[in-house]
Image (tube, rainbow, N blue to C red):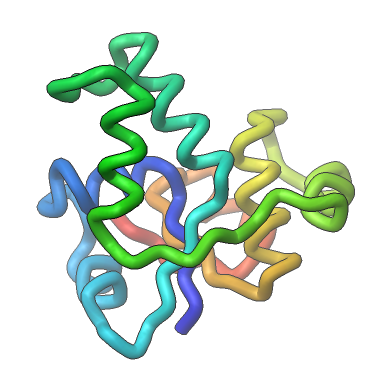
Length: 131
C-alpha cells in the first residue's frame, strides 16, 4: 500500500505512537508499504512547533529536519497538478493543508492516513483512519 501520512499521523508516529490506531500502526510498520509525506506536512509541523502547539526539544526547523531523517519517507512533491486539484475537492471546511493533502493523495494515487474526522467523513480520497 502507498500511504500518505497526514501531519498529525507523522508527528504521532515519532512522538506518541500509542495515539495511532492498531490498523494504522501496523500499516506504518509493514515493510511492504510505502510511506509518503507532503512538503505541506513539514511546513505545518514547523508552524505548530513555532506556535507552541507542539512541544519539542529544539528549534522548529532543526526538529523537523531531524524528524524527516527518522523514517524512510518518499516526498509527494507539491506541483501544479496538486495545486489545481486542491481547488476542486469537496470538503466541509477550507483548511488549505487538508485540501493540499487530499489533492496530493489523489494526484499520486496514495491512501491518506488520518485521524481527522472531517477528512474521514468527507472521504475526498482513499482514507485509512488512524484513530
